[in-house]
View 1 (cartoon, rainbow, N blue to C red):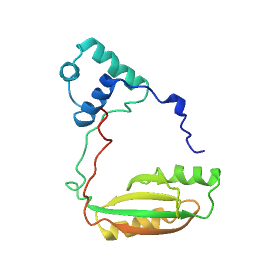
View 2: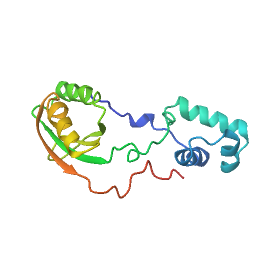
View 3: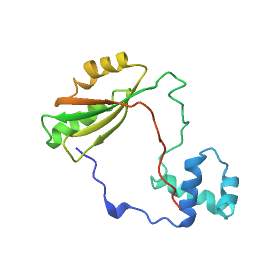
View 4: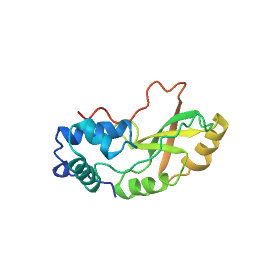
Length: 163
C-alpha cells in the first residue's frame, strides 16, 4: 500500500525550529550548547526543541555523509521504469522489492510517461549492466526500462534552507 501524507500532520515550525533544522542540516554533530548560541536561545529550551523535533519525526536521524567517489562508486545511472500493472497491490510489491537492492540510492513514483525514476550507483558500466539485468529487470511488474548515465554531478545536496 502506498504511504499517504496527511497535510493536517504538517507541523508549524517557528523561526527557532527552522534555524535548528538549517544548522543541523549543515552540521549534524554540533553540540547543543553551540546550537543554542547560534539560534539565540539558552541550552535547555534548545534541547527541548531538538527532542520535540525528533519525537515529532521532523528529524529522522543522524548519519555520516560518505563520499561515494572515494569508495569507487562513481557510476551513476538514472532509470525510468514502466510497470505493466499500476494497481495498488502491484505498486506495493514493486516498492517492497526495490527496497532490497542496495545499488538503488533513490526511487520516486512519477506522474508522467513512466512510473518510477531510480538513481543507481555502481562502480562501473559493466556492474550497472548486471544490476539492471539481474535485479532491476526482475522486479515485480517491470515492463521496460530506459537508462540515462550521468556524466557529472553538478549539484547534490539535501533540503533547502529552512529559515
